[in-house]
Image (cartoon, rainbow, N blue to C red; front, side):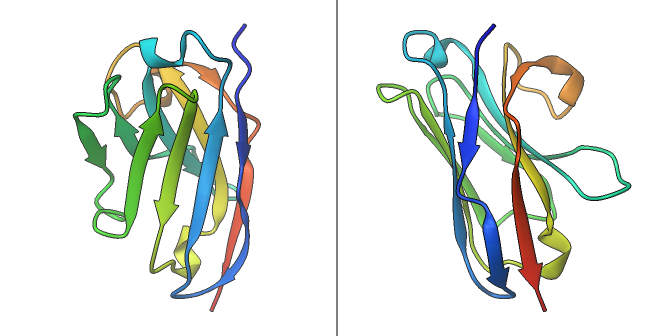
Length: 122
C-alpha cells in the first residue's frame, strides 16, 4: 500500500489562491500518473486535473482550466495543485491520487490521499 498525504487546504476569500501539496513515499512516485479530484458535500468525486509521469502532459477540467496548475517533483515525490482566482464553487475536499493511466475517472486511480478541505468564501 502506498500512503499519500495531502496538505495546504484552508479557508480563503473568493479571488484568492491556495497551493495544495501531495506527498508520497520516494522511489515509486514517478511510476504513476498524478491526478487531483474534488468532492463537494452530497456530490460525486469530480476530476480536476491530471499530469503524466514525466510531467509533459496535463489535462484540466473545463471549470478550472486557466486558474489551476498541476505540477510534480519526482525527485521529491511531491505533487502540487496551484489554485488561483478561487471561486465559492471550488469549495470541496480535494484529493490527490496516483494511477497507471491518464484518466478522468476516479476508478482508474489506485492510491488516494485522505483529502484536504478547501473552503472559498464569497
